[in-house]
Length: 509
Ligand code: HEM
Ligand SMILES: *[C@@H]1O[C@H](CO)[C@@H](O)[C@H](O)[C@H]1NC(C)=O
Ligand SMILES: *[C@@H]1O[C@H](CO)[C@@H](O)[C@H](O)[C@H]1NC(C)=O
Image (tube, rainbow, N blue to C red; front, top):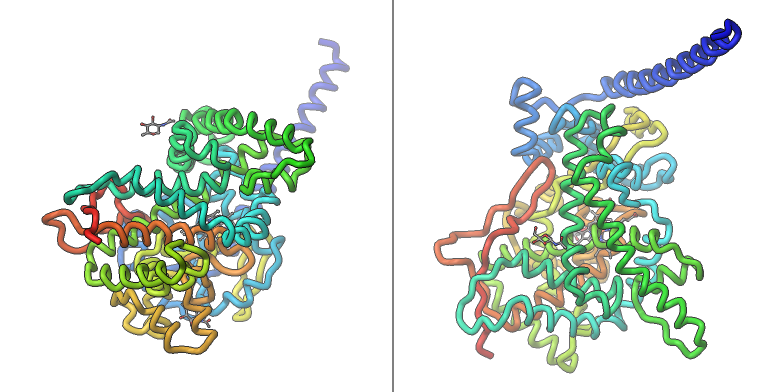
């Protein structure tokens, strides 16, 4: 090699080396700085000794740790134990800071960024940033419920018949599996319309996608961060997701095309579903991969969350049979009052049912924390504590639910707790004790600007399914099962065991 070009090479090499050194130093420094800032925050000291023991304790009984932390740090924030050395470190925020945090703009405290970290979006390619998604749910879906409810109700009726069968005698039913199919069909009706929502392959794919997404997320989390850029895309779990994206696109492309073609006819009546609302916002040249990802995101946010909530309710109902008759009475009366149809008004009137759902959501929440947000710009709290950029925060919602100050006799299950408050109180009590309402002490659907926009739809759907089941079936635990099935608790998550059986028998009317 010529000397000159050798020098040139050396120079380029040097420049590259210096550049990457600076890059590495920046990363190191930002990590170092984050660690340094984090070290100033107090940390939760459990009674479990070594950090390995603490991690184990976190996996099996995080619930109790959050309650202990809540009592220990009423007026400050603290670092929580991590479930593994690779897990994100989180700062738990005492609820008294919620009002000041809620006001912060998205470039300071951010929800999608927390989802991106949590769900390893770089590799799973879930898109929590789709700008039209939130708006389509809030501005199109929720207001449409009044006119969609009769259609949803029909869909619920036929799906329940299909999944539960005749049940002439007591029949054991794997209720999670039955519910997930009912929910996939009913929400599919609103998401992608009447053609796809009964397609077996669509339903299978929709139901499996979330489980595969969670599987991929786990596999990525177990990998060392510096190996991820190279190896994560090659994981079979991650490749699976790419196949699902292709599949979703293949499902949707012909429908999108047919709709765009039909639109050329001025007489054409546009379908009334999420797919159409989403397309309408995106203009005529709609990108089918974007629609596919939007739909997968919707499926992820909607199906298993709703199914878990409904399963938790039914597991509880089978263990508290004294509630079945009063609920059935209410449903029967309300139906009769509304011409036998579950209209929006009828759903509003089912206050005992609404209360029962909310109490289950309080006592068996799917997670022990809420309001997960990532700090993008450092925040100084009103007590002087500093939250450095890069850290993820959470609110100990379960501990709040167990606080006697907020929920008297908090450890008792009182199915009509909220309907009693609504009946006895003022107009404000009426509004704030609904299943869908959220506030600083009531965080199951999150809080503030990013609180779940799908909760009105989910509430309607769950209520319709429960109304149908409670009205038409006797429901009981399997023989030998005493009390409610335990949930499976892992870290901050709590899920109903999807394999358990409940007994159903067609009620004699
Ligand atoms: C019972 C069922 C459901 C539960 C328990 C649930 C729970 C939640 C929670 C806790 C959040 C985070 C809110 C926050 O941190 O402030 C959330 C966000 C969200 N949920 Fe739900 N959800 C349910 C059903 C649904 C349904 C049916 C849809 C769609 C129709 C949906 C769409 C969304 C979306 C798009 C977000 C993100 C909001 C944003 O980016 O601002 N959810 N949900
Ligand atoms: C979905 O998962 C179930 C159970 O794991 C499996 O039997 C089924 O074939 C899967 N469906 C699709 C479309 O992959
Ligand atoms: C917050 O929600 C709970 C449960 O729905 C309710 O009982 C309470 O009154 C609400 N608090 C405020 C201040 O709105």
